[in-house]
Image 1 (cartoon, one colour):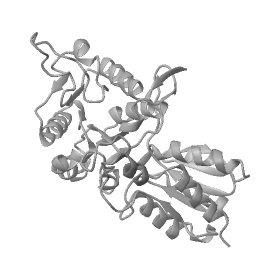
Image 2 (cartoon, rainbow, N blue to C red; image 1 turned 30 degrees about the vertical axis):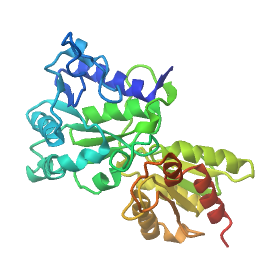
Image 3 (cartoon, rainbow, N blue to C red; image 1 turned 60 degrees about the vertical axis):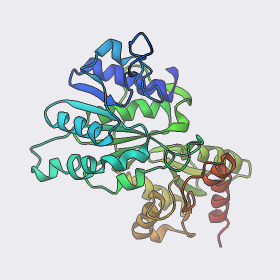
Image 4 (tube, rainbow, N blue to C red; image 1 turned 45 degrees about the vertical axis):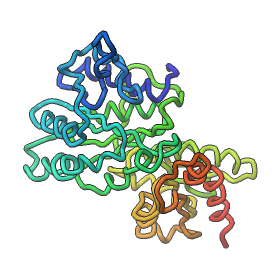
Length: 337
């Protein structure tokens, strides 16, 4: 298997899928680079995070479409074209800007199949960089996946590794339903082994990253790597846990969650969202409703505080849930009497 970054894995999928299917196109701000300097040629920078790099010279302006600074136009273009037989991959520069395209996402893309009785399909992917940790302040560091997950008709993917980025984005582009694909900004440079050739991960199937009998840790996105660091420290004291990487929050792998809870009886849910109406609170409620008899301790939720993301580096570091908070929560549930 090749070793590549999270960014490179996503870029490989876009190249591969656009070669495989001429209906696939990408659109967004600066996805093909915008106008250059005095030469007037395209910079081909591949968007603010470089994920669409190299697409323009290979596939041309008809399939790599630079758009105005208008999120509702970006998503509206991708959704409309996907209804007409294309497969649009729209890039929103920051997840925070999804609010500007919420009508196209929530009221249009998410509803077409249901309101047409299954006759219409909208195979669109909306790619969104999300999350704190890059010192980008309150308007460019939010999670937003908790809001999108709550909307029926949308699928939500959150890869935590380069391999998962490849497998889940491939599945998203080939899916006949709309997918909002969350990519953590702080993970674009993360390296890992990625399977060669075609690689597809099914939605709704979580990954069991680690196994243990003492507690269940449920995490997603960047929080998975933080949970792994906490596990390394806990293992030194003989505490071993199941670590579930959700991979997708809609659909949710309920069976994987309940099977682990039945085994361990102790649960920590780790989520970068603020606590109110978060994925952590949703999963805690689900476990309390469907796995209460298995619980040996109160469910612990490790989340960001209910506050905007700070700009200060020190405050932002304290804001984001980290390995220390996860380890403390696990020790709390394991030691509960």
